[in-house]
Image (cartoon, rainbow, N blue to C red; front, side, top):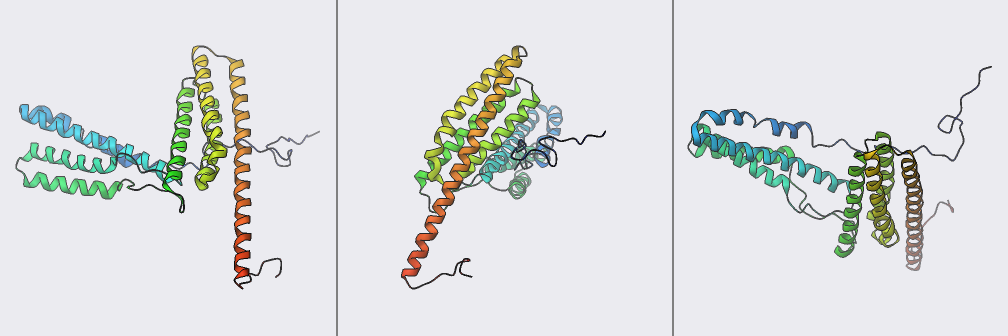
Length: 298
């Protein structure tokens, strides 16, 4: 007799159990690909041209190659830094305007390359100005101001930004350490935990007043998780250790449950604060003789 398959992830399966969230939730495709990779490839012919024009040609062409490759690297790093900036609600501007420097270096590299090929100053200068301008148009400029929620003073904004930066450093360290173990399944599980942590980070960014309540999670607990990940990766890199793997998985499950519960508590507090503010505003308006119609009286 046929038997209907049923499991916790099947239609009609047990309720109340949520499937684990993948690390790709909310992920976006990085812009540091395609066009940026072409910046690394485009100047390579200079390496071949350098060995056919004597000592001066060698020096000029290799200098142009170095400037253009450095510009390509700064462009990629600038795009990655801006993606981090755009993903956060509260963020400090990048300390180094990488894309602006990359535009200037692109212009300098084209100037040197054109000077090595044609000599003179006017034509290389035109190439330099056009190259720098086109680079800026193609890749944009770096964020030049801090980003934060309205009504939040600089001290609170910087405080939240420092904690978020530190938490992101812990998460990156965990990913880097676990790669040594070569366990793709564990890496995906870690990605899911990191999604949960970033939910808390976004909640704190939306309301910096919650930072005090979440600070232990984003500091002490994440630092402990980073250390535990590094220790497990060291063990797994030497030899398979099923017991240590099971313990590490249990640790991630426990941490994720606690982070999820804490984030929900923070969000509930935010909702309560909003209800109180609305009630206070409604009372104030009524004292001014302005009566608001609510859905209950409709």
